[in-house]
Image (cartoon, rainbow, N blue to C red; front, side, top):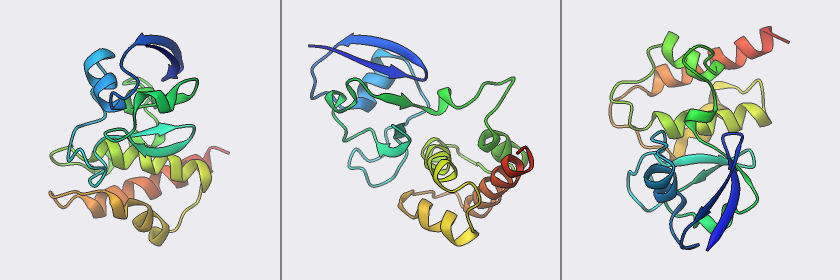
Length: 156
């Protein structure tokens, strides 16, 4: 079945079983490696993508659910030359270690900052509660997100 949607600003059409998990299409067909396979049960957050501005677990989202919609992956937030403020914040704070969870954390933080450009530390922690990180970089991640929020506020 042919499905059309927008991925990182580019309209695409793909011939795929509509029940295929979006994560499989992103990684295997579109070669986007930001979203990671973690648990396959929507429990860890490594596979998060933004669909219509909301953080969604792509491992349990059938690709048919994004037909006609806007999907953004980590690759769609910024570039090496012009990183998104969150990406720059993570670099500045050295807010990753193994990097496995970072995709989902940044995507979820971007959705939070779109809704609430000036979150408190408690709001950031609450938003990230569903993301598993085993390497202990969470305090640096929270600082990076708050840095990005203050950086964006300073640019207005």
